Length: 124
Image 1 (cartoon, helix red, strand yellow):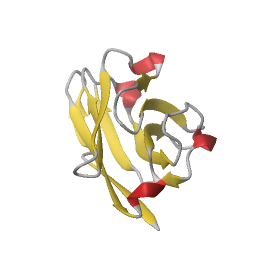
Image 2 (cartoon, one colour):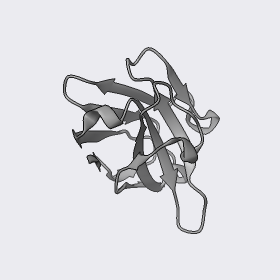
Image 3 (tube, helix red, strand yellow):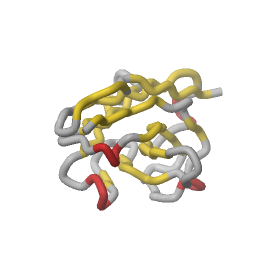
Image 4 (cartoon, helix red, strand yellow):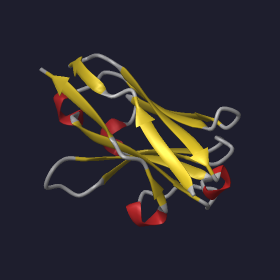
C-alpha cells in the first residue's frame, strides 16, 4: 500500500501565503506523477497543479497561475504546493494525488492514490 498525507493548511488573511506538503509513505513506487486538487462541499474536485516524476514538467490551473507553485523532493518522498497572494476564493480542502504514470493529468480520474485533504481558509 501507499499513503499520502497532506499538511500545512490553515487560516490565512487574503494576500498571505501557505505552503502545503504531501508526504508519501509505503510503496512509493506506486506514485510517479503528483498533483494537487481542491474541493468545496457540493462542488466537483478541481485540478490545481501537477508535476512529473522527475520534476521537469509542471502544470498549473489558469485560476492560480502565477500564484501557486508545485515542486517535489523525491529523496524525501515529499511534494509541495507553495501558495502566494491567496484569495478568499482559494478557500477549499486541498488534496494531493499520485499515479504510476510519469506525467500529470488534469483529470481526477488519472490518479489512483489520494490523501485525506487539508483545509485552507482565506479570510478577507
